[in-house]
Amino acid sequence: MNWLGDAVMSTPALSRCREAHPEAHIALLTPAKLAELWQHHPAVDSIWPIADKETAWSVGRRLRRETFDLAVVLPNSFRSALEVWLARIPIRIGYQGQWRRGLLTQAVASRSAAVPMRKRSEREIRHLIQSKTVPQAFAATNSTNSAHHIHQYLHLMSYAGASSEPVPPRLVVTEAEVKAFWERWQIAANDSRPLFGLNPGAEYGPAKRWPAERFVEAAVEIQRQTNCHWIIFGVQAESELAASIAAQIQAAVQPQSPIANRPLPTPSVHNLAGRTTLRELAAGLKACRVLLTNDSGPMHVAAALGTPVVALFGSTSPVLTGPGLPGEGRHSLLQAEVPCAPCFRRRCPIDFRCMNGISVEAVVEAVVWAQPN
Image (cartoon, rainbow, N blue to C red; front, side):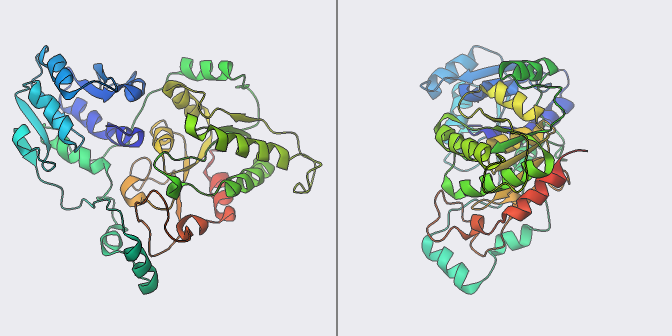
């Protein structure tokens, strides 16, 4: 899978594959940028990174040198099917479509419960707002968990003999990695104050990001109520956003600040956006008591590591891509009830009502409630 969140959502299928084939050698072909994610995973025996400039032909040649018996093609791209066809793997299972039927030995039809993530046009968005109706596909799936993307991968893996019954997404971070994280960033593991994570970005686009000023307001109020430390996560492209949020949180809770109503100890705000490897990101998320986040890759990583998540959804749908196992109660998924969501657009063409409709008060309450006692 090419996206961090998609990769995490595929882990239940890998776990079921290992369960069905305990003696098999399971090799995972993955973009190099995600290779670290799979370290220590019990369902994976070997990791095959794909470099950025590597072609499908070179990948196929590498795979052909081995004696793989079966390939399950989790992505829907043409290239992913072409790679295993070039590798001459005898059994090749994947979803049909994208002109790939001839490359697969078993082309699987799309699930009846699958809901496509189609971008809505501005005209359609305005019509939905005017008519005040919920899109039919999502109205039908709001009461069930069968549309979630983990079922896409589980269903496909069932054609390789695995169970399609869902299990929670799972990643593995060792205690040594968490300890190394504490030491590198000089965060006291024995500090009595809780450690909360904040992930204000989302690589897909601004339509998935709650306004920065609201993150600041919520973080300040949460710090007042819990006396927490904050760690801000993000990629390099989000470092400026994270630095601004960190500075505002730090300034807002100072006793002399006009926002502060009573003296408080100066909080620790650690801005790690763009400064961690993928393994360090995972270790940091594992160390947090709760993560406040937009719909993003780190949201899925945190949930798969057992960290409670408060996730804010706007242009996307928690029905399809919520964190963790669909329906489990440990995570809080917040979204405004607006007729145009989900639109699956990178940028909002109107007034961003889906994210503006999520209140600071609701977020504060969810984070304070989500942290383990």
